[in-house]
Length: 149
Image (cartoon, rainbow, N blue to C red):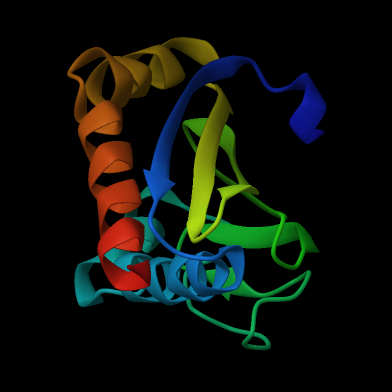
């Protein structure tokens, strides 16, 4: 499924007291660490993810993977587009980074996803309806901020 055709879910943003190069590095390190935890590989196999292991070049390049995610596009220092799919959903996470002042950057994370069928609707209820997605995104951005500052 094309990323542009996935329904928009939400966007989260944070301002980070660091230059964009430092935030970009912090984002890549945080994603590697967060999505490559031992339980993630098992979970991704359980739900039938297309990508279940970290693979490919670092620094991140198109085709690099984390459990549950594949780098669809990368514009170093500006934009990182991740996509994934499994039995219950096709999804994307788009990170956009911008300079907002001396030693300050804004990192935005846009989420998109489709949840087809009854199983998809139930999965959406578990992930989105419970607020788990929002908590996860806030933690992820906070981790990037901590690693970058």
